[in-house]
Image 1: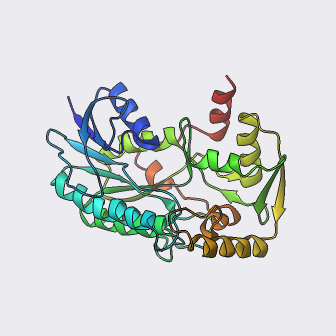
Image 2: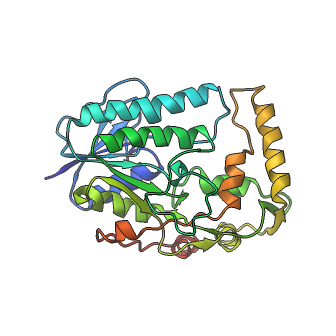
Length: 302
């Protein structure tokens, strides 16, 4: 039986991957600070130590610090310790085993007007610490010969970040979105999971992972709100005003570095600019994205 080590197996993406791997007959090592939903727990603090991967045949690395911390904050320092230094420790422990490293489309340079972003799109100019540390971490992983997966805005059952954050911004039946409606790629956690387990035999390098088709932002948001039983009207804030508000909030957050800003320029950019990933490279390896936002909404309603 093949043994797969899944780092961050107690988290959102990692737990889905661990469960699906076990269902496919893998022996699972759930590597992280907390036990995963299946398999044997291997305790690991990515910010502090090298993991014990004894017995593992391959590694899927999902452990990451996520969020949008204020510059110079303790949260930013921990993000670097986990996403960069933790990657170095993971590569050391992998010792030549195949590694599938879950990155993010946040590594791509923003604002270059590319209609469908390919994997050779520039990786630079990230807008926050998350994008920067993921870019630095994946550079280490690429140099070691890993397979890099770049999803965008992963959603699905158990999502603790994307959808909950969206729902908290509904005020008195109104949700303000920055700028005009745009086309966006999103990634169902099931599509990412399938890619992680298919990527074992892929050539080293980076691969975009997203749903079969991009979405119009406003319609995608309406779908999510309706699926969660939230009735709200969508309005558009002028983009310059949204950016200015984000700068003010970020400046105020620097006065209290232990708390994350509730609005950032990164968050505005994620919603205001079209980002559509070209997934043809992964599809060329035989991976097919089968899950969509419609499936997600339908599952919530049943």
